[in-house]
Image (cartoon, rainbow, N blue to C red; front, side):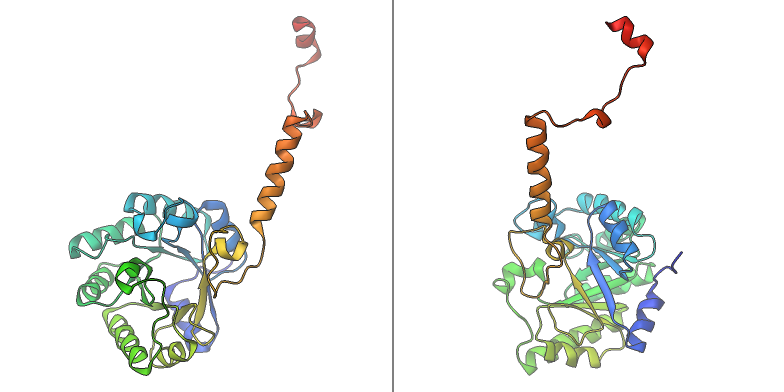
Length: 277
């Protein structure tokens, strides 16, 4: 039995220079296999809104849905540190409600929550969550829940001034109590500069090679979600082709009577068979 990954584990990895691996998962079996593969952190990402539920945007996801998916993933990932995204508008409006929602995800089995931004309100949410016993991962750079105000899917931190602003936000999150920060769609030089000036680890989501770790969406990695593939997501498989092949062959076997076969049916005992005949 491998040792459970904790906040201390993640911090020690940062300090020793060991890279942190993080993948999303949205269901029990995927989380179980990812856990068995040795991944350090499993993210129940709000990306499930699009990859698992078919919504057009992550902003459509609600708390009740996130709790259900978090509970499933937490049952599968016994070693990795499970982190759950807080859905859009589950923490932006009210401080008390934000802490309650974070607590609901922890009760569902998460070991931490992740939220986007570093406004004064968000910093208060982080601080109150940590004080309440809820570990927090921050998220800076491109923040998907703010896609409408950012004007689209655009790279952030493309100048020294912009990188400095992200660093200042990251330092504020660190001070508020966040134990790690995801940097999304940031030039790797900017991300390296930010990482070197933080005590806590950074996790790259399209932020280059010099962060403390990496995260991508599992459906992108598996080649399962085919509608869109981010530049920074490497495909390690082609599940779309695999699923199409299996489903097509099953369909053919059903149509031509090859499924089920003798080994896939239950049979009556001889004495019962005689009664039927």
